[in-house]
Image (tube, rainbow, N blue to C red):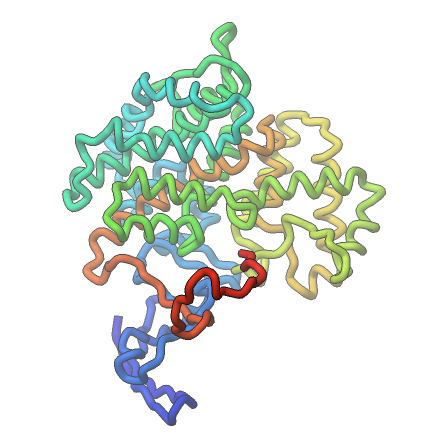
Length: 438
């Protein structure tokens, strides 16, 4: 990555800094600000790090203006069309698609790591039945370090590989157990004769009293969901994984932190909000009224599932899922008023100049919410399935970070706006003040 000098003028005290310009493979260059303090006496200020690069990464590239998503250089639509989820897992972990022999060995490794220690059942039973599955997953994944402490040397490449494989393999089992526990149904063990996505559906929906076979359309739709949600650059949960990992915490602790970040309604929880929005709209007849409300900046109503923080054109993941929605609904013969409402909302919004001009296209959460609904999963399980998909992205970034010589403990700066230094006075001389809130 070549670097050239770029001169930057600062108004503060006529100070001038000459900082390197870092050229990426794709995308705009970045100004290396690591010497900013030394040369100017100033820190950079960037709330939420929206304009700041935190690391070098070769895993995923996102171009929000052009609607591009690449995993290791491969377009997301081609990966969904020509690969399965374990192909993509190998790709994200290792840098390229696997050969036939590599795929067979990797599939065998993942398949034979899917069971969890039986003592973990006791942890599930410590939760209330109505606990949110993401709360359960945070606790159970964090506890894995207590069960698999034999391979926690984060500086040993072999240990990192084992931990990565364990997390990818066990996450569907952990999520499915959380779902079964919420229903009061027995846990369903993984089956080594099923593929990754089909096995996940089996653990979610099978019961001991009768055979279960996941519909082929459901397997295909879930496979696509897992692939398109496997990674998305430096999002909040991936950044949480890297931040906690930078402290040299074990990968299970870092993954539990990533799950907690994904749980937020502005991140992985957004697909739950889509179904809540549809329920609030209620019927096809109310769509025009609710669209008018969505356009009114003074109205608190928000149309979840449209627009994206990064994508200012059509979300490439949504393009992949859109035809799969129709295919899945047709294959399953679903008669669901909410699904009918969703498809009609999509049609009307895509023809509305307000949404088109502002590039407020249906995003990945809109279509994933519909697919989850069609699969028969309740909204509380949408984000756990997202966590299953994103686990490989988290561990890929963690592994990349652990081998990056520039990695240091993450420690952002702040712009302090509190009181200046002042003396402490005796309690009897202090005046009453309104308490600070927040």
